[in-house]
Every structure is written in structure tokens, then in C-alpha cells.
Image (cartoon, rainbow, N blue to C red; front, side, top):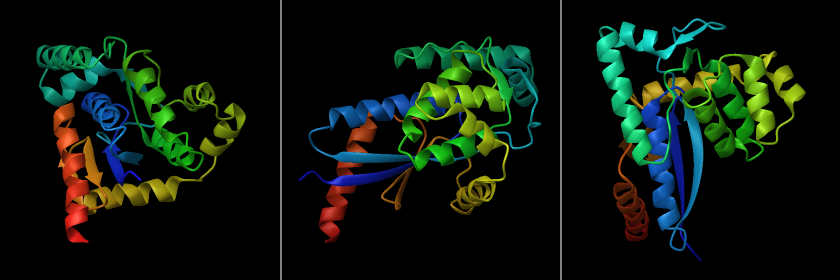
Length: 218
């Protein structure tokens, strides 16, 4: 029987390196498919928790404000777009809309219970980085959820309730307690933390070392 590794990925749907890291990690997992079983759970992190709920704007404006002007912002966008293309992801950040991601994290929390979380994460990343959708909008989130098999109206009702708010805020506090300050951050078996969008070969090595370390500890 293949060894099993649990991986928590702390990330934000508006984080370009989170999308790149997810794709690189998936490449590593596919390479080890006959060797190690990997189970992934996405955990919340907000790059900009102060973003106004219900309001969205061009990502270039948000980057310009954060990184010191439109020229620097465009250079960063061009760089991550080129890196993403190397992983087969065609960013369209010229139409991306920066939004508060708390609702999206609540929806990801909900999707975990029905084993739809990984598919939803991919759909939300695509919605933001490729489709130019406002992932702070409940209707957009419900439509994305319906695209991967969740019930549109039930998702809207969930987002209109207080369900999942306390749980997501608690997980955000856990991230702070773990001193996670940048994403993506990968936590293997609840013990080993690897920050950043590492190359697939690095993730392959980490997964093998986690299994070897666990065996050595027995």
C-alpha cells in the first residue's frame, strides 16, 4: 500500500504565486502517483484583508498602490504572467479585478465537506486570473460553484448567512500563530512547512523526504 501524505496549502485566490505553486505542486504529485498518495486541503490567507467587501477594481491599480506606482506594478504583472505561462497558465491580469476574498474562503471551507474544494479552488483561480470575474461577488461565486457541481441557490443562501465566518477567521488566526506571512505555504503532515511556489522537482524531493522521515521515526 502506498504511503499517504496530508498537505495543507495556505493561499489566497488573488495570489498569482499561489496559482503557479498549485500547478507546480500538481505536477509533482502526478509524477509520484504510483509512489505516494497525496491529500490536499486549502487553507485561507488574505493578502489584503482591508479590501472593501463588495467593491472590486483593476488589479493594476491595487498593485500600483502597493508596489510604488504603475510602472513597477506592470513589471511585476509581466513577470508573473511569464512565469505562469511556463506552467501552462495564461494569465489575463489586464482584466483581473482585485476584491476582498473572505467570501471566497468561506465557500472553499464549505466545499471541503463535499470533497469539491480542489476543483473549486481551481475554478476561483481561473475566474480571477483568466476570466476577469469579481470573486468578491456572491453571484459570481455561486456561479463558479455551480460550474463544479455545487447547487447555485444553496451556495447563495450559505454566503448570505453567517455560516463558516467563525471557522474561516479561526483558520486565519492559526495562520498568524504559525507565522505564515506569505503564500503559498505548504505544510506537510502538519509538521514540515515549505514556503513559496517551488519547482516541481523540489516538491517531489519534499514529499519523498516526508515519507522517509516518517518511516525513520517509527
